[in-house]
Image 1 (cartoon, rainbow, N blue to C red):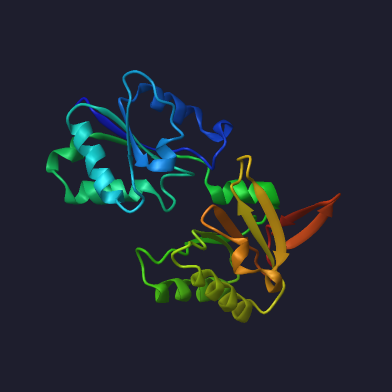
Image 2: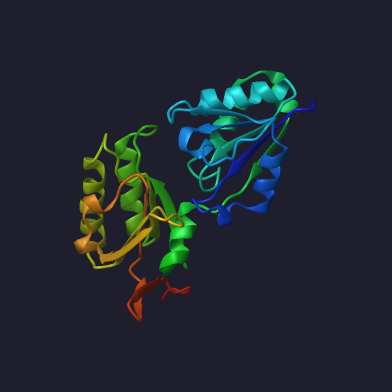
Length: 250
C-alpha cells in the first residue's frame, strides 16, 4: 500500500514545542484528522484536506484515517501533547485490531510530542523528579470507582501524580471528590500545581498546599500535579520552584 498513517502529537500549545519530525510529516500529508481545536492548529494549504470532528468519536475518526490511508492517502491523525498519553494512538490501534485485515499492511507510525504533564512540570521546576504516575480523571471511558481506587493506591505508594481532564462543566463535582480523597489519604501539605494552558498566551501557574487546593482552580485546560511526601518548594525571587528529590530514604 502506498498510503500511510502518522499519529502525531502537537505538543501543549506553542508552535516552538512541535517537534521537527511532526512538522515535516504534516508538510507531506494529504489529510489531517482530529478533534476540532487540534485540527485548527494545523495551517491549511493547497493539497491538504482537514477533517475535524467532535471529541467523543475517537474510534470513528481512527477508522476514517485508516480507510483513507488504505485508499492511498497520506494521513496524519493529530492529538495535543503526546498521542500515546490519553490520546489518539490507542484509538487508532483499537480500530486497527477490529478493522479490515488489509489495514495491518499499512505503514503506521506514532510521532511523539511534548505532553502537557511534562510541559507543566518543566514550568514548575522538577515535581516529577522521582517516581510518578498519570491519571485521567474523566469517567467517560472508565467507572468512577476505578479512578478512586487508583488514586488511593497512588497516594499509598507515595507517587507524585499528574491529573488530566480534572474538571469539566458536565462533571464539576468529580475533582472536589478527588481533593477530598487526597487530603484524607495523604494527610499533609504537599504542593499542588495547577498549570493552565501551558506555553500559550493564557498560561497560568499556581502552586498551593494540598489543604488550600480548591476545585474551581482547575478546568479542562488545566493539568494538575500533586507532589509526593518528599516534594519541596523553593523560593527563587518571587517564583516558587517545586522539585521532588531523585532519592528516597530507606
